[in-house]
Length: 563
Ligand SMILES: *Cc1c(COP(=O)(O)O)cnc(C)c1O
Image (cartoon, rainbow, N blue to C red; front, side, top):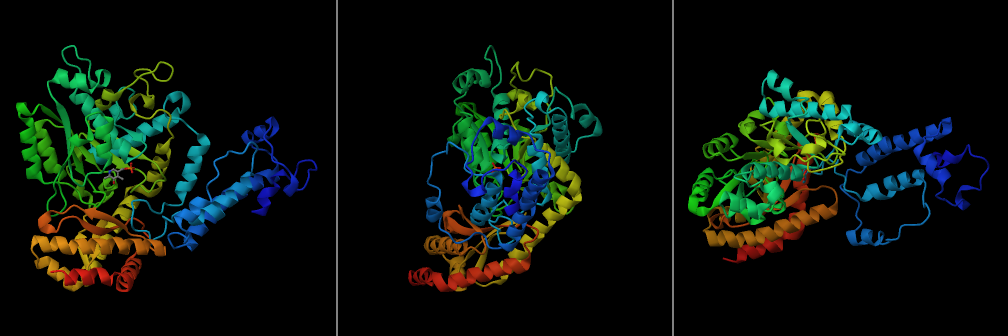
């Protein structure tokens, strides 16, 4: 990085680097906006980009471990200064060097193939190039005047994914792909905002204008309930629904207590009988309730399971309820010829959430929401005369966000580079590796598979064989007792492995019924990095066995003694 410091070299004689004060003045300001033409300055800027592309890439490849062993309090101690310096402190070269040398080693190496705990992983290297172009163009897709062709690209890529989900005919897409009067969906910040947007549309359509009432968006929830003769609105979701849906209940003013979890069956799918009974009960006029939406999950965050979307669509059609499918995680499965059918029925959903920064392997953050009805998003349209006018392609009209980056450029380019088949290969590999991992867990005597991977997420726990056998035959109370010990042990196991810093699986709690032993702490693996192969997964299990033998026997001794 020494070369980088020489950006000033061609300047007239100046004092040596160390003693030279950095100052902010009009001259230096101008320099950061005008890229200077001379060769050495250019070479330096190219070097920085090289450093970012290769220095960081090399680093990520060398440091297979998840993170270096510095404790969080110790790190926090280094970041205690809250004063912004009056004058510039550092040059670009120094800042880049420090980010690479001092920050990156203590960030989490999510690209490691040993990092199998979360929905964030390695991204293809070209995403860095595409992000750089997005930053360099700095288009604001809130309106055409600050984005022009980029808004048009966004409409196109929205149509491409709409077609992946809904598969409408050519005439449909010809009519809507570039129409200023309709929207097939929108880019949003992430799955959270996509779910919020879908439910925002559902709310406004349900509590629309009526007999002089101007609609919930204008008059608010209390007036809407009065005008529609109800006391509340509810959203029905599986108990494995993402917590962003509860946030949406809060933000939309229906109250998050009214985002009601339904129990799940043996396979972690929403219990359809319970759902139907709930709908019938809440539809009684005396309940004074309207069902704003039913949400089906395509790839539950904890277990990766997919709700029976076709059956949910049948139920919703029968009762005229908005069906939203949260496919934040599972959406790209639709590209797979082998496994795409797992999501069948999604084409009947009124709205669908998909995250770009999950299985499209895009950099943070990019979410999308899609609507079956191209007029649905009119329910959330806002106009402001200085930015966007009715009938224009201004994308800010039907969007919670105002100014926003052009992530569609990244996704559109990635789709061209990967093709459907490229993404399908990633999806297939994840599912098949997760299934092989599940078989391996089944073979190891001290592990129990807790949820079989339907997609590429699975959960399991460590429980010595004798206890697992006892658990299987035990009455409910004893199950609960064994679980109490197993839960503490697995919590500890996950923590010790994380702190050792070599590999990472996450931990969650499955809310099992009392007969099944009640809440169970489980280890959760998400297989999305194509570099994560069975050899690595076996090492991760070996490490967990070693940790268990060294540290966890007291928990299990206690469990054995207590009868
Ligand atoms: C990740 C996820 C979300 C939330 O998405 P963010 O991008 O983190 O806001 C919602 N639902 C499901 C099923 C998810 O997997």
